[in-house]
Image: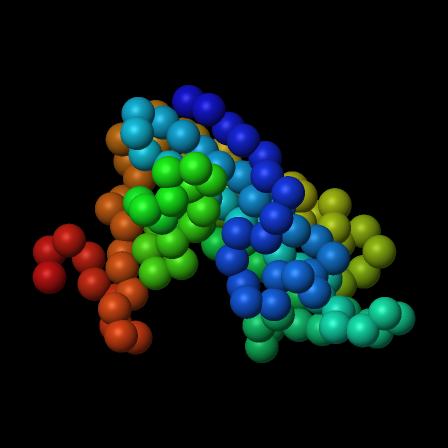
Amino acid sequence: MKITERGWGGHFIRAQWCLFRRNTLIEHEGRFVVVSTVGNMISEVGETARKIRYDSYYETMVFESDVHDQLYHDADVSREIVDIDSPCSISECKHETDAQANLMHDAVVDELKEKILNGKLVEVFETVEGEIFDGDK
């Protein structure tokens, strides 16, 4: 298993305005999974943080990589992995919240490593025209 920390936001259309961005690629036996955490979003210098969702200043999401991207294995945001037990959002933004976001991100990476190694990672759900499908449909 190979873990690569990368220096860009892995999801969220406004990631460039997030002061906190983590993107971790987990590679194992030909499978590439991206863990992305973004937060502490501002759009102007000096602005206070804005929520990235209606209830969160930070969020972590997990995706299969884009099968057509054989260089960077960036996230395919239409192929979200939703079977995550660890906390994936933070609803406050204080001075120390970036440290909490790092811990949240690390917990999701650790959970996924264990699930992948034990064959317990649920098959990915694909979003198609606003509906979610699994392999049985």
